[in-house]
Length: 187
Image (cartoon, rainbow, N blue to C red):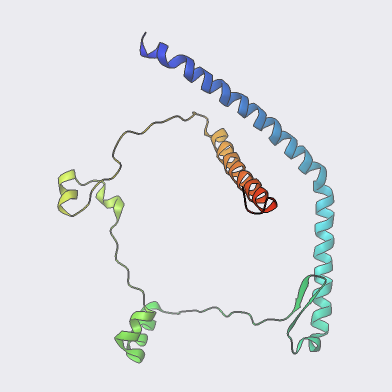
């Protein structure tokens, strides 16, 4: 039996299973899009209404600023309203000049806390070096071995499958946690 005959059946079975999953995912995606389209008009109307009401509320708050002396905010109907200090933006006009002035005003010891100095090796520049040169400068190549590859040539489905795996993992964890909570911690 040659290598093609050995591999053909399991590869075909994998490809068929993957295609079945891809077809079901496409059906699901189509149904999700149809549901979204069904709700989109209503959601847009509700969003516009909410934005209008928020704008009206902002006008009422601004017209009654005196109501927000102390405390500056209030929570009503689950909505926090009022005023808060806006964090100012730090603007450095000249990095070089500010660094010089920090060192002059605070000294080198304190300046080290305010000035970042970073040196690092540019890994891409090392790719052209030989193995002996890399070894001489203390660099070694890790995981430079063959690894198993099973990937389809149409990567779009793989993205959906990876996302689905993440959702399934989360769903299993949530189910396990809820069973644990229900059973008093014995899952």
